[in-house]
Amino acid sequence: MSTSVGGLVVLAVAVLLFVAGFVVLCVALAIIGSGAFQRTRATVTARALAPADVGRQRRSRRLLIVAGALVAVSFAVSLLGRLF
Image 1 (tube, rainbow, N blue to C red):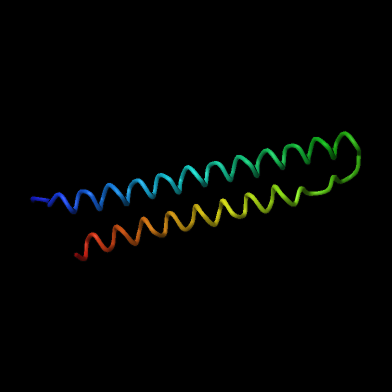
Image 2: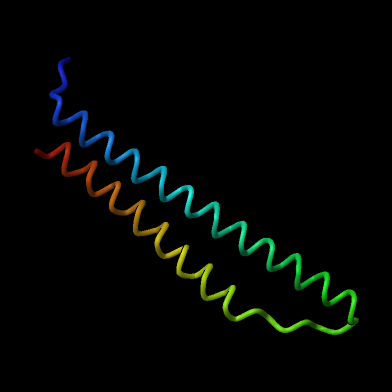
């Protein structure tokens, strides 16, 4: 089974996009986790429910969207590489 150089390049691009999406997803999960930890600690300290950090939520939501887009593009590139 021989694979052309173009096919290998497309596969490499797809894998890199997928890995980038995974890294962005891990960063978003770390931001969400640290925010939950800080909110829990503030709640225990004050003995009242601490307010949610809107900026942190907005940032993590954007990162999750970017991660999803990167993974979707990686699948599209992989599919196009198989078709052509």
